[in-house]
Amino acid sequence: MSLKSTTQVAKNRYQLEVLVDAEEFEKAVDAAYHKESKKITIPGFRKGKAPRGFIEKYYGDKVFYDEAINSVYPGALEKAVDESKLEMIEDKIDFDLVSAGADGLVFKATITTKPEVEIEDYKGIPVTKKVQEVMDSDIDAEIEKIRNRNSRMVTVEDREAQNGDIVVLDFDGSVDGKEFSGGKAENYTLQLGSGQFIPGFEDQVAGHRSGDEFDINVKFPEDYGAKNLAGKDAIFHVKLHEIKVKELPQVDDDFVKDVSEFDTLDAYRSDVREKLVKDAETKANDEMDNKLVNTLVSKLKADVPEAMFENQINEDLRDFSYRLQSQGLNVKTYMKYTGQNMEAIRKQFRPEAERQVKFRLALEKIAQLEKITPSEEEIEKEYAKLAENYKTEVDKVKSFVHKEDLVKDMSVEKAFHLVRDNAVVAEEKESPKTEKKPSDDGINSENSPKL
Image (cartoon, rainbow, N blue to C red; front, side, top):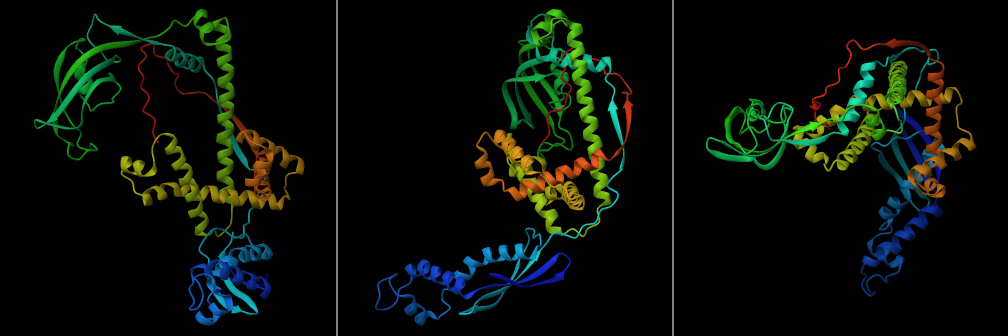
C-alpha cells in the first residue's frame, strides 16, 4: 500500500489517493475466491469445487473484486491516513474507485480531520477561587444528617396524624364514579407534608387517627401528567392503619461513641469541621477549574467540524444510557417519563458536548506547543493504576488501552496542570448569607432524586 496524493478539498476535508499494489490486491482476490466459491455452482463441477479460472471465465474476471476491495480497503485507508499524518475523525467517508485489475487497486477516500487550532495567553489566566467558610450551623446540619440516619420509627397511638408524620394507609380513588389507573393502593407509606401526593390529599389525612376510614375530596391540577385526569375532581376512600414518627437520638457523648471513633462531642465536632473545610476546599478548586475550562474554550480559535460535536453527543448519550441502566431504566423509558424525543435530548446535550470538544482541542494544542509528553515511567504507573481500578493484570489493560491513546490523555491532563499552575489566583473567603438551622422534627423536605 502507498499513499499517492493528499488533497484538501474543503475545510477539514481531505481526499487521499491510495494504491494497493498488485501482489497485495491479488492475495485479496484469491481470498475472496476461496470465501465466495463455496456458494457458486458451475456446470460440470460440484457446488464449491469449480476452479477460480472457470468461475472468472463464466461470470467475468472481476467477479471477486467487490469482496476483495471490501476486505483490503479498511486496512489500506488506515495506513494511508497514518502516512499522511492527518488526524481523521469518525465521519462520513466518500469512496471513489479509480481502478482495479492486474496492476493493483487505486481508490480515493475523502475523510474529515481535526481542525487547525490556535490558542494564546493560556498562561497567567486570572481566576477567582471562592472558598466557603464553614460555620457552626454547617457542623450542626451535618450532625443532624447523621442523627436522622440513626433515628427509629415509633408508632403513635394516642393522637391524630399531623404534618411530618409517616402514615400507612389504603386508598381507592375514583373520578366521576369510576376507578382510574394508579388510584388504588394498600399499606402505602406516606410522609405527610412531603408533597408526594396531589395538593389537598395529605392535608386531609392529617387530623385522623389509626383505624379511621374516611373520604378525601381533591382536584387534579390542570397541568397533571395524565391528560384524562387533569383538572378533574376525585374522591379517595382512605383507611388509616398506622401513624409513625421519627424518634431522633440525643446528641451527646454516647451518640458520638455510637456513630464515630470519637469519645466526646467536642472531638467529633472538630473532626466534622475538618472534613467540611476539606470539602469546601475541594469544591472551590472544582469551581476554579471550571472557570479555567471556560476561559480556555473562549480563547480557542478553530473551525470545529460538526462531526466532532455529534460524536461527543453520541458518547455522552452512551454514558447517560449506562447511568439509566444502573437505575433500572433505559432511554426509551426516560423519554416516556419526560415527554422528550431523541432530538430534544440531543439538543439538551449539545452545549456541554461543544464545551468538551473545544476544551480537549485547546489542551491538545497546549501540549503540542509546550512539548508536553509523559515519561515511560509515568506511563507504566498509569497502566498499573488502571489495572488496579479494573481489578485485572497490567498486560490485559495494555491490550485494550492503546499506548498512543493513553499518552494523549496523559498529555492533555498535564497541559491542564500547566494552565492551573500558571493561573493568577485571587482567593476569597465566602460566608453564607444566612445560617442553616437544623430541624429536630425529622421532616424530610428534600426533593426526590432527579435523573
